[in-house]
Image (tube, rainbow, N blue to C red; front, side):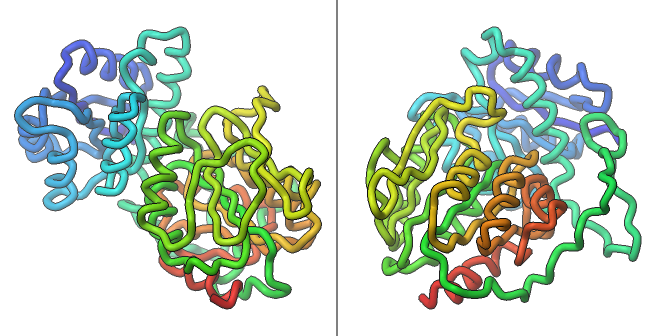
Length: 367
């Protein structure tokens, strides 16, 4: 299947760069480019793309105004092309709230030595978002469903000797005893998912909550501040050494790992560049594994929408230690990658759509 893309940017250089990076993949085709929001809306009508890459700062009609009109008139996957500045972070978070599925950095990053990694990320995000369950509902499962092909290669994914365990029904209980720590991991689609879940939690949440959301370092503090303004619980970017407090949500800073520390009786935040070999920094696996090794109480661990498999290994280890585990179901995920990887390891107690997750949390914590 060829994915049809509309590239929207006011810079001719950026339009050409994005088109070149995308079309080096045989399954991606840029069917049109647009120089601003007005041009983009006309091109959407004419070319009916599968996905739009959208700049934010443009003349005549900016990206946020264009995005609102796309979501109102032609709902489709949109990938924002974002500056990593403080202003770019705020605008990108606005875009994610308005319906954009994800973002990719621009400007200096496109001229850096990491251009091959940027190209790979761009191609992979376009593939995943263009086929997101948000816009393409999966057909009903058959008794023996075939494994889907891997979007990047078109080949079936590797099969394990033991077939994946079936996902538990969403009505399954998170059980007892009540957890003393809540940990959550998310990636693509996670900012909006967290924005839907966290404001439903009351100020008297009886435990601390540690969250790893894959984001650049310039985004995590504005994201935490935004959530804090929406929530009854206190939400903040995590800081080295701070003691954990009930009713507080700690967002891992971008570019560094967050782990659970046991240097104080109630636990604390530890931040470290290690392990440097990790694909993601911060990493959900690194957080979950630290909790499984050092936390002595009951844990509730959740994995939300996201690309890849980060968090599955850590959740498996937490489950072996007796943790309660929860994963977002495919029907509400932007990308059903991280939750699926956990489900396939057989370590998930409850699989539920995003709208049901707050209820599971409130029932578990009796709040």
